[in-house]
Length: 207
Image (cartoon, rainbow, N blue to C red):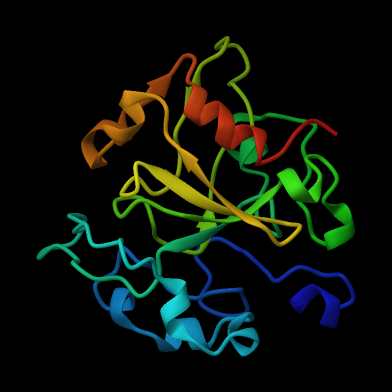
């Protein structure tokens, strides 16, 4: 609806935004984690006007990045970096041939039914509203891949919404995915991994 009202332009999804974005705030901040005004000041709030929908009821795991740990967050979701955000593959690993979707009409690879917009994000990973991920392996390192931001794990899978408007649940198939935590994630290098490959497949593909 936002794009329909905005000349096909998607809601903005910058990193670390304090203004003019689909959502504001940093869920790794104890102050921001309970501030519903950060939801209300986002570009999409006028289309739903319900702060409760920004949070998964099962998102109850504590976030140990803060002392004391953050036990409650008003937001569980983040938007794909390739939806009006940053070409993370290029900025982090010099990957080329991918594009950021700035308009609905840009969403062609993958097509809207296969291109995710929102996902739940793990409690130790979620911060701004920008879900950063690389769409393929790292040049010069063969099939090496990294989990950057991590989708939710509390359902033993994660919910994704897609650009055509549907949502679906994806169950994690690799035991190492469910074992990811703050410590493991910080060093995690993945040579070949079905769950990571799935997220890549719905993120971006070569132009």
